[in-house]
Amino acid sequence: MKTLYAFLVAAVLPLWAMAQTTPSNLQIFSQDGDSFYIFLNGQQQNTEPVSSINLSDLQNSGYQIKIVFINNSLAPIERRITTPNGYNLVYTIVRGNSELVRLNEMLGEPIKKDEINPEKRALRFVSRDRIEKQRNQFKSL
Image (cartoon, helix red, strand yellow):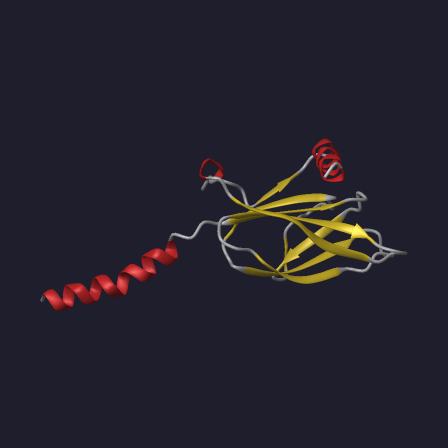
């Protein structure tokens, strides 16, 4: 009986530990203010075009993202990104020469314990004022 109990504990303990993962947050914004739609693993995340978006409570360790711009002269961006458990990730969309755009990872930092909120919505739009504040913050670095 003791052996059976020890076996059950040993079998359930790893499953319980995997269930305790902390979700990640992803923020993507366009430095030039280009509006876009974003798709995670083929599912559209925003109904209105935005130039900055916060996606929270991401449970998977990786996503295939596609960014489609309102401006048809900008080519869509398709990329696979890794989202480590419990991290705030910030990506910027920047223009190169001509109409070439790319996605750059700017920042990745662990989520503080007081920032974790199980009631968070999966999607939140960000105001223009906040975008300008972030741009100025990154330019001063």
